[in-house]
Image (cartoon, rainbow over all chains, first blue to last red; front, side, top):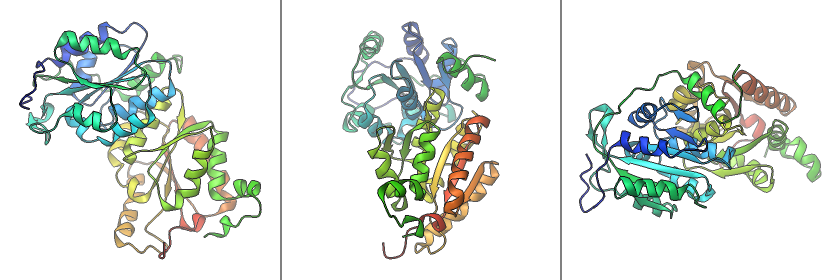
Length: 201
Length: 185
């Protein structure tokens, strides 16, 4: 669990927040779920063809989502990433800030641990502030969600944003609720159907 | 400077240099998204990509970030290619094996080859030796491009094969083609 001191944000739950996000999606928005629990909870929240589940390439949820956002500027793209994953690819925040896509909302699920490997603390757990890092990387529209209602408010606001949005959420150390079916070709193909790039055979 | 770089007029130069051929091949195959981590050898190509409004081209902090971006873009219906140098390729084994290959993504990579044919940095020459074993271990298509007269054919056919077979390809740009980076630079 996140032990960073002096932060008044509520400790929430990944599956609950992911379910709240999915419930708000009415326009076939794309959702890219990072490796491990992040995409397990996305899967558990109810499969949609517009969901992409990562089975490796830790740290690339935001870059993959950026690519989708650049390919489909009229569709909103959500990217869900863990704090440990993001720490592997902090440079991507600057790339996204520079390109500044209007249609990208990033959510960082911050529990301060590598939950799936045995809940070891991340190197940043006690000292780093992910939202402050995002702001310093050029993503001015970044904020911690104070609680579940605030999270929902920030998600709704992001849907009409004119710059990329990053939302930090502190979460507990619970594992994911489900397990994504590990079939990368089907995942990718269905995602492309969901985005209207292809029709099923 | 390679013989291929000798230019008589700007128009001919665009068509007859190795970097002009890369740019034209990308355009012909509707590849418009080109993230890169730079290399000295790639300077002219990067400059010309930036100058052409057809392309969205930009630097990334790491090569695997660029691979993630073009993978997402392709799934969203937009084609991309990544530019890098040999040492950048050496950081990619994880993303190739866990994203590009298993998800069957036509990842197109241009790798400026450092570490051979006159390398002056021992580290670069060692890194270079890891590249082809990694490509071969994943059974990834790759070609080492050495001749200007073959280059347009290799570029065009390799891009088309990657797209139609949904498999990654690496085009290694040999110093024999590009002139490479020499000791005094």
